[in-house]
Amino acid sequence: MAPNPDTEDADNAALLRDLSAFLAIQKSLTMPIRWVEDASYLRFTSTLDVGEVTDDRVRLLGRAHAAMPDRSVSLVLTWQAASGRPQPFERCEWRPHDRHTNRPIVPKPHRYRIIETSHRHPLALNARVSTGLAAAMVENLPAAVALDPEPADWPAFAAAAAAAWLIPDLVHAPPPPWQYDLLPFADNTRRGGRGR
Image (cartoon, one colour):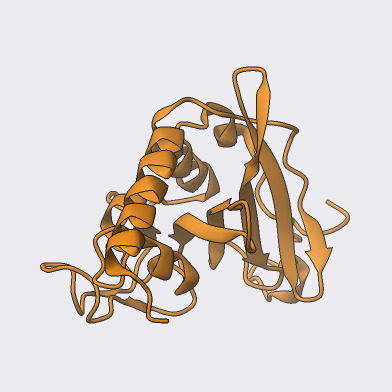
């Protein structure tokens, strides 16, 4: 049996309504962020509180390359529907390792745009892709816009995400504990990393 487009449209509209309502209210981290090492990555997962209630359908995830200091960091908001696995619905990328290219399903004027700087994959734009919001979430949010201004450092990036997602205490999140010791510095000064 073929999917019913009317049902898919109604499901996408309900999903957009629920996620937009969540983004529009102030949230806080349930617990302080603690980065953990996972192979060559640094990661964290946090639930979010709305008032005194923890919304366990939403997670804030962080990921960074351990050996790539001050770049290639992702902060992601995921949504856990009643059935299925968690899917991203918003993402911010700081100084990404690879450029992002908006695909043909992205609405004009964003279609085919190449973004080589820090960027955000906003819910509102991904809700307008031709395949629908649910498909855009499964496809890892194909639509992005550049962050303006470009965050100069971790505190500026955390502040940009905190403002976009109404999570004020995200500005106090510690930076990933990168492995600076693997990099040669001209002055031979040891910077950051383990054993700071």
